[in-house]
Length: 414
Image (cartoon, rainbow, N blue to C red; front, side, top):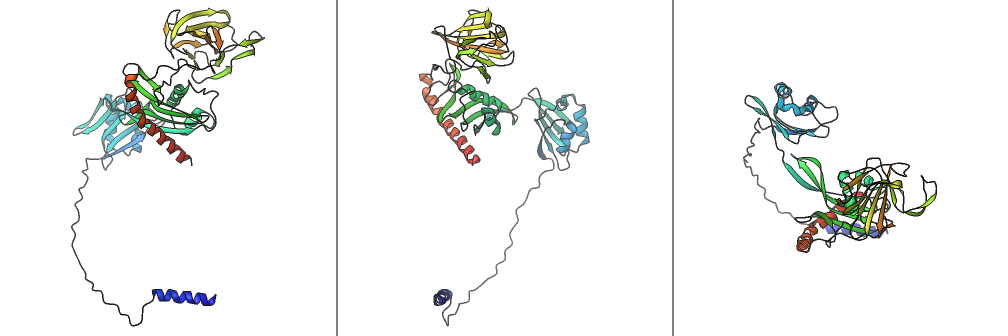
């Protein structure tokens, strides 16, 4: 071992050593000195100023907001207090923003604030003082992407990724014909969505419509894309152009708790006997709007013993729907009146044989009650043939955005 180490050491020395009598030639060196011209830096004009933005907090006053923006300008503050056109600044709304332009000394050069009425209040310094004026805001729509995983509920998963409630509700409406969001959700289900966010003067003012959405429930992925048609309005369709909308809604109430399901034997709380319950009860506060499950014509709108105030809608073919225990009817709901899917026909109440405010809902085929939560519902009309090519072209980039949103979330979760 010692000999091996010595040999290895000698080998290293031989590899990197110099042979005897080896001389190194002198490398000539030369010193070079040059004068380089420095670039000219243009000084920022003192009147150009700096823009700053501050979000309004609860309890803020105009003075406190301007102080955080480092505005030190007594004449400007006096103008904002006195000028009538600057009064919107004394109705500051938490969450909105005030933008100011100041010079190096904190003097106010300009101010912009999106007022309650939707106009932009603009204040600017002039040679003689200040001028305040209102102008129409610049409006724009941009797309945002979110995706998440269900751990307890859809709304909880949406809150975790800062998805607006209005978009969450739209997702549920888009897929409500295929997914019962009261019972079908499973831990591990996923969603991805591309939606519109409206901006006014560069500030977000609220979400618009869902443009594309994907929901994976029990391992089955469903996708829907918004298509705005010149003839038929807007609607959601699958990648192949089939309508995402069903001819009937699963639930006439949005996001409610089912308290009594379809059953052939149920203890009736009012009659105190076991009876068949051929409908679904939706618990909801009195006054909650009740929507028509599908297009049709009102057959009955009045009081009927145990049903209380009831609306019966006759749909195409052998289908009809019943909405009972209503507190009152919606305006214009009377026998013979046409109704569209989603149109309000009445309001939740406690009339008839009801022990609490709720909606009793029935889905009938040839006047025979069927379980509306499990019956197969027919689809609405697909994309018109004349618009199919344009729709399929539109779907390609939206599907790519959904894939991007899905990938971003998974990477962030890991």
